[in-house]
Image (cartoon, rainbow, N blue to C red; front, side, top):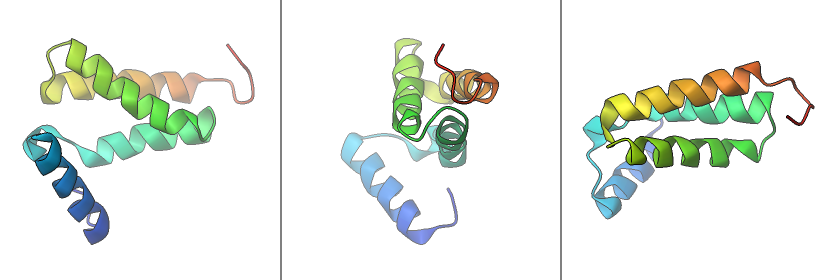
Length: 87
C-alpha cells in the first residue's frame, strides 16, 4: 500500500465495498498515473486517466498484469503530452 494510514484505510474500505482483491491493486502505480496526468496534461486529467486505466484493464480481463499495462500506457502518454497543447 502507500504508507499513509488514512489512504490505506480508504483503499481497504473501498476494496471491501467493491469486492476487490487488494493483492491485485498497486496503489502507488495508480497514484503515479494520476500524478503524471495531473502534472503533464492538466489536473482534471488525473481522475479520467485513472478511470481509463481501470476501464481498459477490465475490458482486457482485469488482473494485475492488465492494470500494470494500462497504467504504463497512460503514464507514457501523459509524460509525452506537450504541456498546454490540445491534441
